[in-house]
Image (cartoon, rainbow, N blue to C red; front, side, top):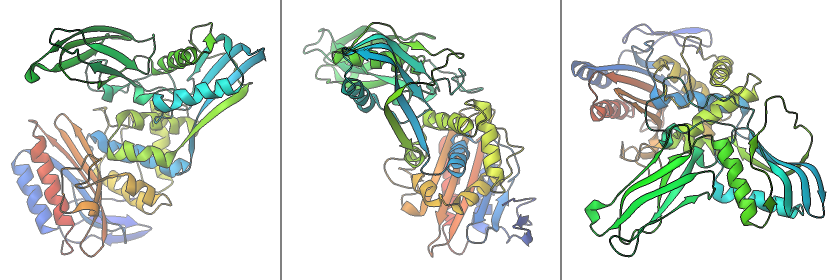
Length: 473
């Protein structure tokens, strides 16, 4: 479906070859938009009726704006449309060499396709078991980290500036554990002044942990901070932990998550009694590792990737899937290939993203530009696709725990399923709303303000959605 918009009250659209004049503006919505602009808020809006494909209302719907995390609608939607809900993202442990008297003379190769769901607490024991089940008690070689499916550009263009330990800016690679992070577990001493205990999960010597934490008795003095040196995996824990604190977990983004994965597996094997003589190494671009025996293949279905990606707005998961889509469609595991694949997939559903500026799948880049027309058109296409229910059910539900809408629009509950978006001066909300008589509407709201006012922008969005939920609107 391709939509063409002009002004708020006289919108002409083309739906499946027919030209239709959209209804007049929804009074309550247009009133909210006028008030918002009086407050200095820039607002674009497009609303589409799912049953007919007609536009109910639109305002500045062709104005390119920064979508923030609403970009995840396009990246997740393209993956679903292009690959299918049951598409499997694979991670292999491959044996290369020969086993003699329990000793492997060769290497264990980890090959990744960018599965963003792998948890060290589950994956490492499974990999170790596969090695031991093969009768291996010693590896005369090393763990090879084969993450070549993706390029080495681990951060998107013009991402926000923050410390390298920032978890929501974790590096993107074809092999990764725990969303590209590690956990530092902190336990306070028994008495004020006593030493604190800190340990890593997953445990690996590749992460260097320096403990400068002290135990205190006062509750208001409890403050723990973890920093990581840029370009290194040197972690420093500072601050104070209150007496009685037991294994409080703090996540930190790691440098080169693929190599961290390789070291974590090596250390897990050694802990389980499997000696490994060599240190992990990354597969070189020109190396041929095609032959070998797969000891274990882990598979994650696309439909199981989407709920955390959309409802919780998980950035790392979105960009991993973005690059995976590019690689899966033979364009390559790069940010650029992910953008090209997103445009190509939606074009097959008559959604024109040719003029959209797409630099990542998470929406972290402030260089991204899309319109509400494009977002609403994508939502309509997804609602009419075989994966409609998979996509819809993965979105955050208003007023429901476990999503970014948990505190908003509680009175509407599951009648609203949507994706939020937030960057400095930017706010977005896009998804589906159901009226009191069951009519389904797709909506997209993109906003900008000169002076940050997140609550004011969210209030405008919520008022618009409440109005759209009324049958008379």
